[in-house]
Length: 331
Image (cartoon, rainbow, N blue to C red; front, side, top):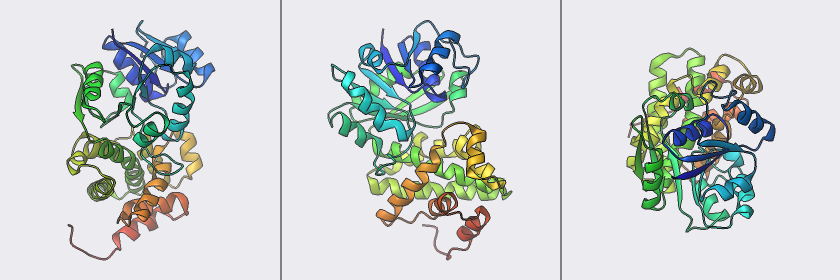
């Protein structure tokens, strides 16, 4: 029986743990909060994030990274991007054997804006099998066994196939890819655009605005992704356009709800408190903006979103700044 350890007991980590366990894997779910993990172990469910979805017998929980290291050489990381490097660094001393690292985390490293596969190579080695899972996925729908499709991009094709065999089911379709960079960029930047879409809808600008924002936002993702080494085709797939549409249009998206709150006039602290979960798009806005500046890439939606979040620009002014840009050819 396959074994997989999942780091991060939030909604997405829990949903993937449920998926793996339902597929017959021995599954270990790790969380850093010992009190929270004790509650999960007692209740056999994640009452806070996915209430009513009880753990199968082959899904156990722990708050000890030593348990993770002893359990499996296949690690799937689902912690927020700002915790990604620190979590792997803390895990490494407990490992006696080589590992394979996958992640469903979406974002950049906040310290330097690097991609997460670069952190895996730094903490372990460039030879460590590494893979990212991304696509149009909400945790609750995966937990509810609703049809879902994702992309698994890996540095080594055999690892992509291994992960695919573990996670694929009749209701969870997996596609493999070798474009780790493209999948990473799509997953990180779409969160920023979801905030922008939420702001526009919160201001009452309607479906026309939302559709234009998604389309032009995709162009910004493609420009940055190609510059960083991604494959253009990736951005038209599940991990690009698919994920962007999902997170910009459905209120299950935390980033979209955050933007809606800003559009309704609430401040960032209030919006974050009301949502009660990580808003990855906030940090990704800064990191994406700095990358755009570094590589001289035109990303006006990202720029205006950054200014709303970090420079106090009024959301309505940001929209008018976008509409008032000089006319030009679409391509």
